Amino acid sequence: MNQKEFLAHVTPVQDKLYRLAKRLLVSEDEAQDATQEVLIKLWSYRKKFKKLKSVEAFAVTITKNHCYDKLKLKSSSNLQLVHSNYEDEHYNTVKQTENQDSVNWVLKLMNELPEQQRLVLHMRDIEQYSNSEIAEELNLNETAVRVTLSRARKTIREELLKKHNYGIR
Amino acid sequence: MELDRIENLLQLYFEGETSLEQEAQLQNYFTSDKVAPHLEEYKALFAAFAQTRQGGFNRTLELPQDKPKWHWIPIAASIVLCVGLFLTFNDNSNSDHDLGTYKDPEVAALKTKQALFMMGNFVNKSTGNLNKLDAFEETTNQILK
Image (tube, rainbow over all chains, first blue to last red; front, side, top):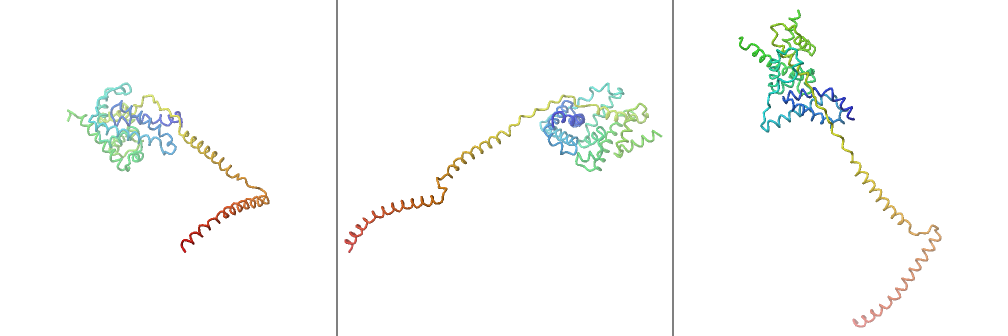
């Protein structure tokens, strides 16, 4: 497999990998770093691509594990993740600029979910994987995926409503 | 009624029961500008999803070049060594096979006879010398009588 073929495999997934990394690592720079490292890792595994059912699923697994490793490293060296970069770029892409604050609020809520819920919600609502794909990726059964998903969505709804009704009720 | 349907879907959505297509419908509805006022608070949720989908990996990827493959060098070297050793030892054994034997059986028989005679002569010559030992025997017999 040469570079061109490899890139043809990888380019369609790399954005997804980046967003997944960002969901787990939160920081944008770190997510970019992680994606780069994951892609280089994939490059070294390229000879196995033919044996894989899905390169994408393999890539997602590698990304997930890589990010978990990073997080572990971070917690052991006593550094805290800094949740600071919510309001950046994207301004022009969002139609409702007046809602940007609440969007940022939702993004913050999503990153405060427990890891499992965060991953499931991300894979379902952002990357639009089917429940069976998520189940396979995370070694869960489909019922567990649905329950986790429901829990994550409800948590966000609760917080969202709390904020929305703040000062009214 | 459109609104009823959306409310219903929303209910299912929070139970995790919606299909991907239904979620796409919700997504469409909530990112349009016709959201019913009492559902306004969910707009941010779907806007956040849509927004997150825009982000992407934006670095140029530099793949490490393959290292030149040297792993066949030791193999080639060992083959050359083996062949070399084989040839040298094979040469020696070839010359070992050439024992200077005779191809013609008659000549071989004659030569063998000749060689055996020669050996017989030597043996006879040396046994002749052994006769002198009898002298020792005689003297010891005289003493030990």
